[in-house]
Length: 394
View 1: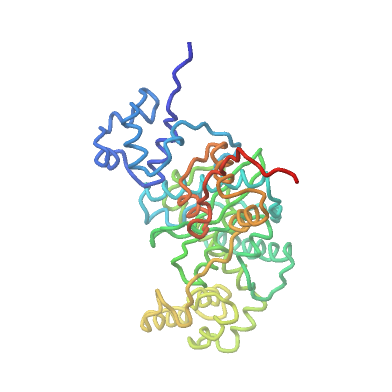
View 2 (view 1 turned 30 degrees about the horizontal axis):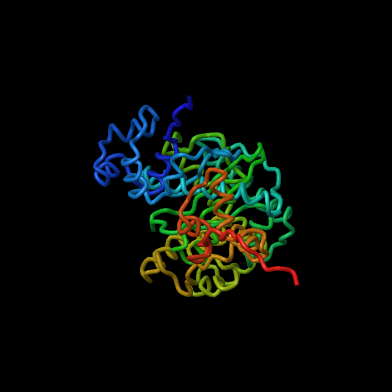
């Protein structure tokens, strides 16, 4: 006698979190009690088919997803959220779940596509807590040296970095952005293990300006190089989290604005606000970040720094600076991989979605397109029609 199959409760929970629903919210939407939903998710009871249909409709997931098993090897290790202190846990969980889907899609794609190999410098950084002024100075110098080593490792010299997204992707870091990202969600990064090989994904908020998105990318690179990924960031104290963020910011400033070349540029008119607007065109870094960097390099005094920042506020530049351009993400490696598979005829849209399904990634085509930043209907394709007749050979 065949054994009754269980519904995958973990998938039901992930679908709920993917949509950003609490148990209470899903209960109100489906008129299924919280207690019953919890029993479904923990696989203590099996939902009736009528209830499963209601859940699939409410969560906008194919019903097959709740019956699928996971066939991937990728393991999510940690996620660094810049906005940990200003966003709800549900928002962070939703973004992490969506990123987990992206990671599993990436694992599927590596069976078909050769992505750039990870090429990161080996860094040993021991970030300490509760530093004295002297220790903090030495830590800043250490981060400065790490930024220089990274530039040297990638052969960048001291010039402005024109295409930071392309640079990260060429060295094996996946860069993407998520649709419908809330404005208070800053960039974040995630480490993923695939067959014990580590890879990193950086996720950007596409609602930022171009210069802020670039700083976010450099900031996340700082996390990747400087910080341990075995810890649960949710368990860090508020002070520890702020220390991590300050370290990543220092790295980003040093990496984007090298001491020698940027310092030489600033030295002509270090106290003139309009001059920083001029330099912004060259370095593609915000005026505020350049002023901070000039102070860090002792090119301006604390009094001059405070005066310049008051001018920034007085001019209304805190959120929107002169010459700000909207961030327009380049085509990502994931987009390029899928489009290559489709254009080469290796897979049809229908076949691609079936490959994902076999690996336990059962999504509507619209959701897969959103996760991969593909144009709508790219992955919508009918099942090939079975031909029962053929033409005769004459």
